[in-house]
Length: 292
Length: 258
Ligand SMILES: Nc1ncnc2c1ncn2[C@@H]1O[C@H](COP(=O)(O)OP(=O)(O)OP(=O)(O)O)[C@@H](O)[C@H]1O
Ligand SMILES: [Mg+2]
Image 1: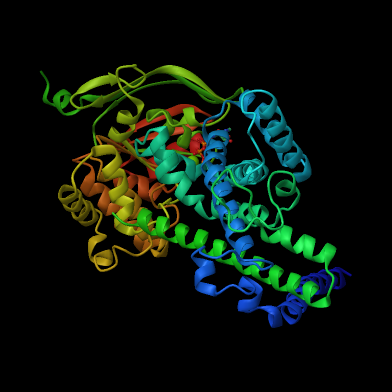
Image 2: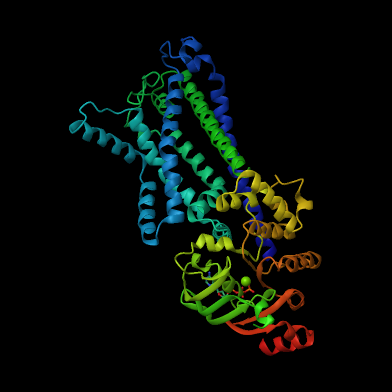
């Protein structure tokens, strides 16, 4: 009986794993088969000459390049705002916060995590309306506003993963620093954070992915279909997920729909590159920690 | 003055030490004056409070949730007896002077060299050349140098259990402590490796005041200058050398106690 149960569990976990592989594989295969043929100079730059487009000397119409740059800037600015803030908050919650403060703050972070992204977008939109009616009559939705709202969206992931990574260290490990005469700051920065690095990194990766794919937030805060390359922090911009969204919603020829797949593929690769960057950063930090 | 008194000056004076976690008493009514006559070995059944006693001496208990405790502990640090709870004595400085090696080896997950270097850098502020000298010195002191001198940059997790234990000891010795607290230094080691550590401790006993927990009577008899027997959070006996030199006598004494 027991043997049968064991075997059942064994089979089930195999099937489940296989299922996940199959679904992801199918998805990738479909995306590749539809999107790969469309990838080319045409998809990125339309009729414009490539080098001039990359340097921003000519305007690109109906092609991906401005959206690529827009998404890249969007994610980088959002990460620049959210990563230091989120990791520090996580460290504070795990290592320094008194119990009562911790309970209240954790509740607030959970609330933030549970906020749908469309609400975050609405919040940004409302803020612009407020600013227009009060201090800055010229305020408008922009790249900066979108990045700030995205940063708010990914903040809870960063806080949770950092906190969890630090709190999962063993009691014995927590005591190495103090037993050697380190003060609390030294213990946190030289013993605990390096050991929690992998967990913190996974939070960063997760939040980069989240920031790159979100459409609801940016739709209300500054993305438009034909903005061209982003013109500074206060300008409008294009973004890949938004482009996929409107290509899929408003295509007139099947070629346009296919280019949506191509765009999805590009978004996937861009996110992959950003992940790679995060890993490389982690590796160098780890190496630095290991040397004297 | 009597010469024997000169030799056995007190190094540790404890008055009414008591410790509890979450309201449950772990140590109580510990009153003790210890003289420096060799290694002090702590024995007692599992859960009798040996580790907690060690952690009282470097105030590490205070890091656990639910801790409450009190009493007065004086240790001989830099020549004179000092109250370890005195506000003038920074707790980080106390812990540098009262080094502790835990029951299970807990190396930092970095290179062998960095395990010793990092504490040196953060706690002593020595410059790079001095740190390197100290590193070699302590690794030789714990007889680890020959085994690791070609692999100092390797991750210390790859060392064997006994090597890790000696690395932890070296890490503490590098900070030049006055007192060494060793929680079952041979717990995870085989017979031969245990012997090595025991011989090492005997070598070190002139330079450091050592307090070690042990589970083995053989080991206690081999290394101890005096044996402290604990039971249910209290000090049951303090045995002098002549009381445990004869194995049968010691056996009988301990049978009476447990
Ligand atoms: N941080 C803590 N929180 C709660 N209880 C604790 C804590 N540390 C120790 N205790 C309790 O105090 C008692 C003594 O523990 P201690 O670790 O000092 O025993 P020990 O003599 O070292 O045992 P062993 O030989 O098994 O290592 C045990 O009952 C233990 O459960
Ligand atoms: Mg113990």
